[in-house]
Length: 174
Image 1 (cartoon, rainbow, N blue to C red):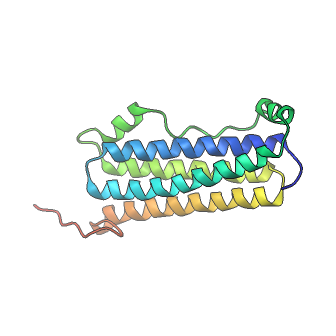
Image 2 (image 1 turned 90 degrees about the horizontal axis):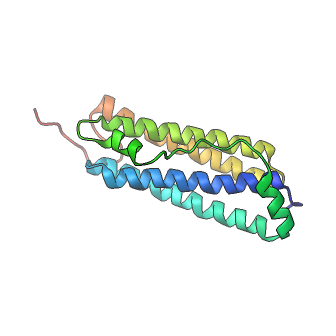
Image 3 (image 1 turned 90 degrees about the vertical axis):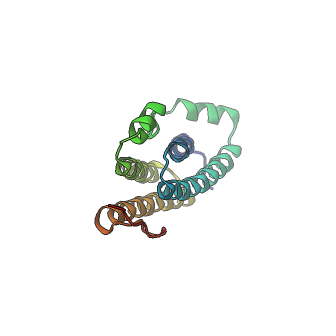
């Protein structure tokens, strides 16, 4: 990796926090929803986000390990654009999953979270230093778009085709 840049370390630390928060959203929503197909979708998304979290922690820790304590302290003071916390707590989940709530709201919220993550990673890649870090952040941005497209495909399958994409066919009884 290239020489130390406190902005890069700050963005990597924020990436870890973003993935933790997004994973928490999916995990909490998955525990709360009752629809088995929605549980499966949220579980798949949670698995992807867990992989992102693991890799973000490794990249951040490798980058930080090469730095002195003074350099890490400087990075903690750097001000950069923080990603909006996608998980605002149980009230958000309760609102989305309460009895009678539209299950599509959970998918809409999830797609919005993935879009915010994409925008954050693109911004981070623009400001970070080092070819590896830039490529890594751009790859994460692409992954978030893939997740958003997956979510939107599930939503479209529910709305327009009457079944869950990639799930067992569901028939609605009159």
